[in-house]
Image (tube, rainbow, N blue to C red; front, side):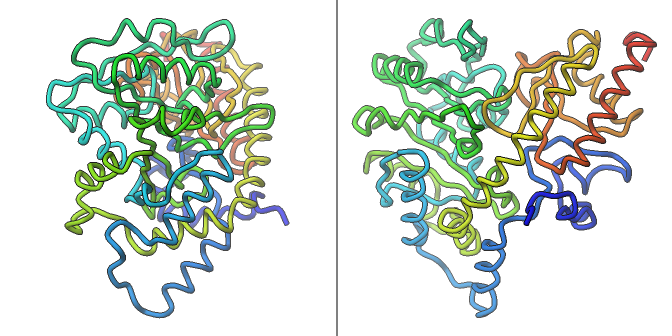
Length: 400
């Protein structure tokens, strides 16, 4: 059975429920390859476990730190899939990985403190730092000769106000993985300057064959006492609407501080029972589904890269992870925002612009394309992109 055939996508439901610049927010006829969200329904085991839980008719309070079985389920999966030794007692299920990032920033930063973020990178790093009263310091994510994000000059950005380095591994939007030697170097820098590390691994389940995900936690729990990790289930398992994520660490005192900032003990913060049931279904029963999804995504990735290589004014690298293509459109002579508007209005294709708002100033002249959809929808999207670029080829960007 092909779980990821076009026939399995229920566009009528997506047009009612898929928000964040996706099907429910675009005009009829527009294809949105925008937000990092999948067009496919979730694994049937997730649906079944939620249905079984709901049918009893009780939605009582859950333990403030989360269900014990949920915390154990997460820790077991982290060990099995990523070789991370995490004590279940130091895992905090939370209402989304995004919320986890805000909790970490609030715990680490005082007003005026600095935190280093890569440029470009997902906007939530910056937003979480600003919400805590901190100052984001942008470190240019340049690619070195080995094809990795260079860390050569990161120490030059550290001042007496620096409190944290933010690590996005795998990197969104670049789709890059960090080799272990680079993670070791980053940890050495953090140790030398007594810095915290916010370790975002939300994309760590979507790694393509021929590549290996390395976690900074594999360098040892003792070295990672000031590393706080964020993980989620929306990218891998399609449950973004359930707002399910977690944060975890390697130190009881640090965990206690995270709990305090999360407000779960007052019940003002926390995660729903349904979200935890879904998490356990993801971790315990649905990795087979994810492995099949990665096989489908690999074909989509290769298809998009091959198509773009034949188009004028656009180029991209093959991502090692994520279901996102980060493409350079500077040769069009258009800004990212203008190009996205042109595609949307004249060719009914919507993608994400590289901009300060979403990824930082380093994303100027780039766009991001999500390919977690069927081959049929993706082909139509690529056809529209190619037609749009060929129109530019005939008219010139300045005339559009």
